[in-house]
Every structure is written in structure tokens, then in C-alpha cells.
Length: 107
Length: 424
Image (cartoon, rainbow over all chains, first blue to last red; front, side):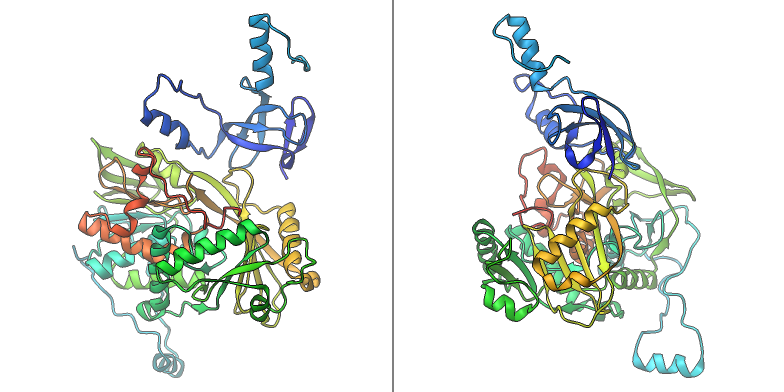
């Protein structure tokens, strides 16, 4: 069992997490071409080595995390909260619009 | 295109020759020979597994192209070819899939005679269990598609299942009660190592060079055309390269700048101690993600779906064995005292639609036969035959036309829900 050092919960078994996918930037659907969009949808870099991946700590803090994992040895060398974490994004958007604030732990 | 040293006379494996060699005490020649790397080949196949060897064999046998090298970074059959659970069947869900795997099954039936090598083909029936209404519905769907393609396949009830596999818990009390099963009589098992060795021996006899411990380090491309392959043993000039790897297919394709929609997952399997024959069919449960069959030696071979995250690691894990053993006991509680002898993992290149990727790529002369997920072994003969035909005729055989790489950029995926990695 590989262990993933969650920045919120400490080291936890990988079975608590869900692998979401490789970390990559999503093209703007309004700007991109169908070919580029499909390449974003389907193509994988599938590195044999260090890779940045998105994981979800579903059975823990339920946060999205960016994990740097070696795909041959399964060693994890870095982990950080995902910028795409919806709660964080909602909070930032709420702060910008000065609308009602979203409840949650500050990170 | 015939090789200079040409074919060699291989003594046939037969009862007569067995007695002759036994009486005279003479040695059998090596099953295949070792060669020095030639500076050039007409075709270079990367990957000395069952797909690569089958491709080389059919190139020589059907098309007379014998100036062929098969490059294997380890020993022949060291990858997924020797790590699968050796199940063969053709009861898939899409008509394309059914036709394709049916051709493979027919080639497998004749393979021992074609290769003069006992591949221990064993037709024993294949049961895919349904534990709930929705999977029973999928089984009916599959049975109807199969019948339209003239494949023996039908949905049977618990009583018939009990007759075929008496040790299954078909009582209604099980946590996952068995409501029915898709019964596929032509399904069975085959000795996977024997298939590798048989193809290797037959390809070698026809003049193909098999290079073990030869790792590809780069592929040379001029313009949009393949011109050579670099290996740890030297360079080869060639205009045709076939990527027949499983596990490393993304990395090989990256050498020519072709992206692949592939994620590599380990799939774990295990084998128990041998017992007297009691399980005469292959039993699969999609809901429990477990499949089991008994080998001719009496061991139970069982496997699961792919691991929950991609990795190139081929290590087994205790939680897998624990989980899959629990699932197996759910089906056959009487196995509780059996001991697991060993476990292992192989690499599965999974595509978004659970169908393989075969055919041409944007780089001229670079062909792929990859993305075989959990269904590569059962497809090896037809894949080799089709890729050989593609290379020899430069025309894409209709059987594999829908499995091309371009389907991902053109949005015409072939959703194969009959694949073993898919839960129902």
C-alpha cells in the first residue's frame, strides 16, 4: 500500500484517495479547436518517472491535491492543495465579488 | 525479401521424432536461435511478446517477408504475454469486437497444428455471472449481439449454472446472489507461454531474427518517415517499425513524437496450490471483479480488474490478494482452506474506450498494435495476422479499420463494455 502525505490529514493510505488524472491545463472551450479539445480529453503523457497528478482525498478531507509521484516506484515527493479545488475557487470568487462568503476552513 | 540464410529445417515435434530422439539420444535443436544484429531489416517489430511474435510469424508465413527482426528488451514473453490469466473468448459487446475476437479464437483453435507446437488449447466454456438486474440486462444484450454474429452465447439461469459449476454458491442467500450468467461454450484457456514459444519457434524457422535483451533506445525519423531504430546493441536501418509493446507503448510512440491516449495500469493475478480438477469452466464476475479458472496442473488462477491508479510498478500487494480472495470466497465458499502460492502483476495499457489501437500513425512506416488493456492475449493471433497484412499490402484490413488511432481525434470511439476491466 502506498502512503500519500496529505497536507491536511498527514500520511494516509492510498486507498483513501481517488486518482483523478494527470495534471494539465484545460483549454478554454470557447477558444479551442475540436482537435485540441479531443487531444485534451484523450491524450495522456503516461510518463514512466515523475509525474504531477490530481488526486482527491475522498475518504479524508475531501480536498483535491496535486501529487508528484514516481510512476515506476510509486514514491511521492511533493504534494500541495490543487488550485482547482472548487471550495477554494468559490471562496476566491466570493471574495472578489464581495458576495456572501462560503463557509470552510481557510487554507 | 527473403533472408539470405533463409529457412531452416526444423525437426517436427511428433511421436515418431520423439521416439527417434529418445532412442538415438541426439539433442533437439534450440527452439530458436540467437543472431547478431544485422545493420538493416525490412521490418523491425518492437516487443517480443505474443503480439510481436505473431506479427513476425504471419509476415513470414502469409506474405513471405522474412527479413524481420523482433526486438525484446528482456526475454521473450516476459511482459503481459506471460502474466495474463490465459483466458480466451469472443463474447464481446460491440459487433466490431465480436467479429475480431471470433477470428482470433478460430486461429487459436488451429494454432497447435499450424505451429506444430502443443499450445494446450482447452475449450471449456466461459460463464460471466450476473448478480443484479442491470448486469443481467447487459448479459442479454451481449448474448443478442453475439448471436447476430453467429457466436455461441446465451443467458442461462442458476440451475444450469449449478450443473456446470457445482461449487458455485447459487443459493439466494449470498451477498451477491447469482441471478444468471452469460454462457459462452467456445471460451476456454490456452497455455500462454506455449503460444509465445510456438510463435517464436515458427517465426525463427521461417528466417525471422529474434533478439532478446535488446532494448530500443530511440527511433530515427527523417521528415515524417521512419528510417531506423537505435538499440543498446547497435543501430538498425529500416523503413517499417511496429510498436507491439504493452506497458511501454506510450514511451515507444513518444520516440517518434506520436501521442497515445493510453494510461498504464498494473493488473494483479494470483495462483493457488494445485488440487484435483473440479472447476471445468472459466468463471467471471464483473460485479465482484474476479475471474477464475483451473489450470491443467490443478492450480486455480484468478485475477481482478486493474489497480485503482496508473503505475509502471509490477509489484503485487497484500490488499489486492485479500480483496480478490474475499470476492472468490463469495462465489465459492468451499475454497476457504486453499492457499495462495504466488501473485504477480502485469501492465495493461488502457484506452478511453477499452478497445485497442491498431494500424497507421501520422509517422509513415510507424505502425502500432497497442492499447490492449485486459484483452491482449486473447487477440494475439488476429492482431498479428491483421498487422502483417497491413504492412504487406499497405491497406488497412476491414477487421481492424475501426480500431485506428485517428478515431480519438475524429470522435468515433468504439465503446467496449464487454472488456474485463469494466464493471457492470
